Amino acid sequence: MSARSWPSSPLAAAERAFTLLVQPPTHLSFDGRGFEGLPDDILPLEQLRTLLLSPQTGVEVRDAVWRELVIRARRDGPAWVVAAVGIAMPGLRHVAGALAAGWRGDTSDLDAELLVGFVARLKTIDLEPTRICGRLIDAGLRAARKARDAESDAHLIHTDGPDPIAPIHPWDHPDLVLARAVAVGVLDADEANLIAATRLDNTTLAQAAASFGITSSLASSWRLKAERRLREAIRDGDLAFVPLRPRPRRRNSAATRQKVAATRQRVAATQQR
Image 1 (tube, rainbow, N blue to C red):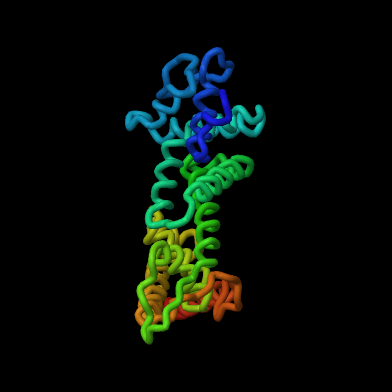
Image 2 (cartoon, rainbow, N blue to C red):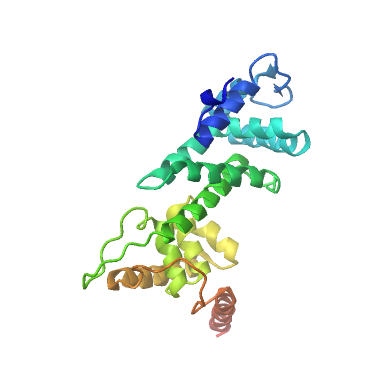
């Protein structure tokens, strides 16, 4: 194959590598025997990908397969890393499309960061929790968002007008709004994470509260107050042209933990009355 025919897009190149990997004569295949819900046979990897995308394949089966894929990627070398990326490609492409929406820069850079984040997470991901593939893609998404935000921060657009102007894409992306709110101290990191988890991701308020070690009602109260401050900051223009660089915050995670402890003490005192 000539260099000219190789795709310039990172995702297209990864897909081409996967296609070449599974072409006969290939030694890479997946033994579906012993995986309930898969055919009792040696499966070509492209067939395995199709099966994992099928609505008839249960979540438990997907996770069991992905545990095996991650183990092989760690143990058996680069070919299985390419295999893992190729099998996850439909999800990676979906995320890449969302990242590119409204983006005026080079999407190839975002795609490259997406792949780097995914592959790096293969080495460290905990195989016990569910959504293995989803969490791998989430890691790639975070890496791409970080690169996108850093690039966006280098291209702030200012105006001489007297009033704040509505930011252009991707400045009004919710992740950027939250990051800017943290940067100026409108929110602390935990409040931003709570809003992101429950408003932007698929995490329930109960799940988010459990991760903080607090009750759902307290988490709801935190979110309500944080979102009120966030609305006021946006309305007043406090988040306009805020550079996303580290700076002292008015509040931090230690302060949040103190707030949790104080709230628990008040609750306990109320219950003892």
